[in-house]
Image 1 (tube, rainbow, N blue to C red):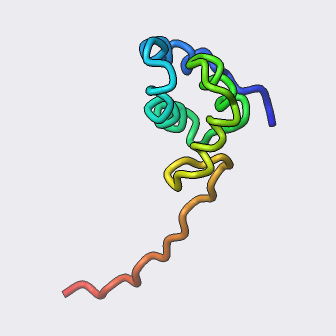
Image 2 (cartoon, rainbow, N blue to C red):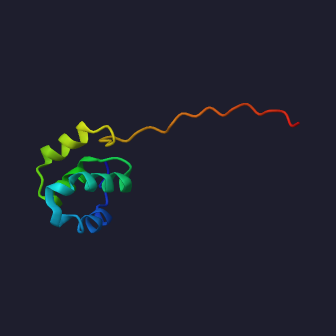
Image 3 (cartoon, one colour):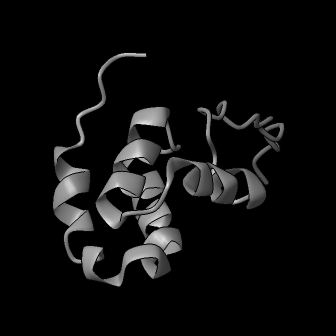
Amino acid sequence: MSETDLTTLRLRLEELTPQGRAALMPALHLAQSLFGYLPEQVAAEVGRTLGVPLAEVHGMIEFYDMFYPRQTGAGYCTPAPMLPAP
């Protein structure tokens, strides 16, 4: 995996830092909204910033279905057939 730019994440996490562990879920939502999923570097940065052990961060990521530890594929869509004009 290429190096992930964490600058924006660090800036956005500053407001959640005083809440510590209580801000873990909002911080993960924020990180996922920025990156689309939660790669290892992002999970580590969230844990380090909030003072939460990486094992707990991974535990929350793996427990909740709304968090994606890996990139997800694009959705599959089949277009409807064109209807004749009336």
